[in-house]
Length: 429
View: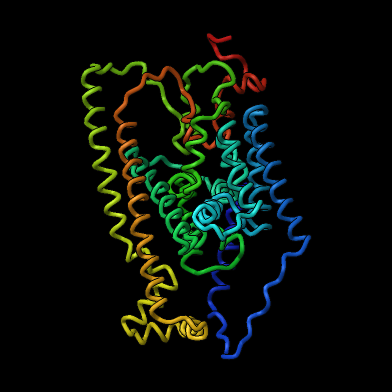
């Protein structure tokens, strides 16, 4: 009943967002004076520190609820609070996902000042993941929380489809870092599907994209988290190295398979004790072939992405304006009338603008080699991971993919026995 009510509320908010976008943006007459940039007030600074404090507090509480209390109800309530606070109250900004770009720009631009808030929102979830698993995804991330509320009739996707879709976050992460490093755009924020819903305003295509993801999330659990989120890649890596992590059963597994059925994220590794062992020589030969293929994938992907430099650079206003001037595109120049007026008033010569645009495209070309190489390496490592066959004796969470949502806890008979809500499992003490 609670989830159904929340579903109607979210749909109502989505309609309200679209209503705000029916009207054209105001057109300012010539002579309009931009207001002076206001200096951040002390209260605003205090609120930023308060956001970091709330982030640390919710991460700590989520860790306690998952690892110590093992409470699905507690995780759900904390997730709902995070949606309200970090989502609708703080308008989804600043968020850990977008902070990737802030950190990247700081690394590549010596003039950019990285704020304490952006640093904390980027580092704290990774530290907690390194220690306790993806508790940030479980109950703190507002983007994950709003999707979690929509999981009503989860279905399983074919394994091949899931494997292919899992490549998308790596591509998104690489491109997000590339665009931020070049200084062209913060594409992760620009195409965030849920921030417009939190702010009740935004570009109509992005709003519609967010609504589609929420509707898909009724059946495909957390589609953005699993198949798009760039920060999820970093959390996945950190969680695999976590010192402590959520376990399905409080003690021993009775292999009832109830946990497998309860997980909507396909994040539970099943036992394979009965599988026929492969000859060692066959496995070694296959691994050797894949290792030889790795450099080919890296170089091919790097070359392919670097060839997209002209396409990627068009997102930069400088490149757009330079291209319009070079092609004498009167229609485009008319559409960019304010940009043209600002450029002409700046006193910068066109030749300098052309050189700046060329430099941006060159940075995209060089960065494309690194991003493409990264994607090629991910593909190669993925192939190796799929080909390696490991013996698994019991049901256990995949440390990288597990979102620590605690759903498997309440389905485990040993857990229910611990909570004294059912008698001991027959044949087990």
